[in-house]
Length: 212
Image 1: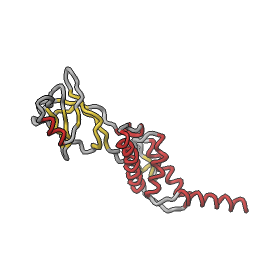
Image 2 (image 1 turned 135 degrees about the vertical axis):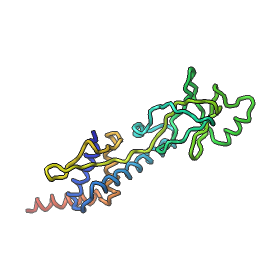
Image 3 (image 1 turned 90 degrees about the horizontal axis):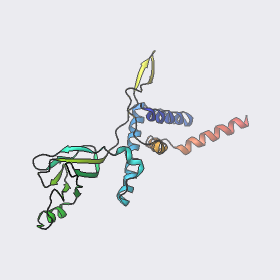
Image 4 (image 1 turned 90 degrees about the vertical axis):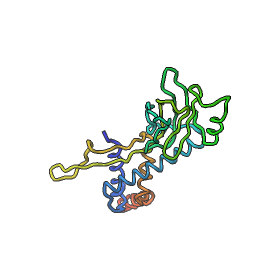
């Protein structure tokens, strides 16, 4: 049930009406909400980069741990919605955490006879298109990652000659309820709607009604 995207559209349209700031189609609002969603994601992700602790607001964008099958070279194509790794564990009788290293560290470990990559000490390195695992004969890995937000859709259908909200074909935003206000305000900013102007219009109307 795409409840939150409808609430966002209703709120934005209500404020547009109050502020007399023009008209925006459902598709335009969807694009603004999507842009706001990506902005909010980056905002929280920067916190993640700073302290390496995943912000609670990003939990909806964490993929479920999935067993992936590596090719004969120990490689796996990076998913198109991939943003950042959460963790990799070898899948087998004895699950082992896979350490992620950069290319320089990988080269050092591969040439180190004392602690080379092994089933007990597996490694992986992220390249532009794929993840390289060592030893290369590892076949299955449990993989979890942080992914991009999906694009929301406010769908409509015609009922008795009127355009109405279509919940079945709509795609909801994935944010928690606590972030919906931030998301809505940012979407309004993308649309060029100034909340302060709307508040001023409301204040002026209240003054006019009191003066009459």
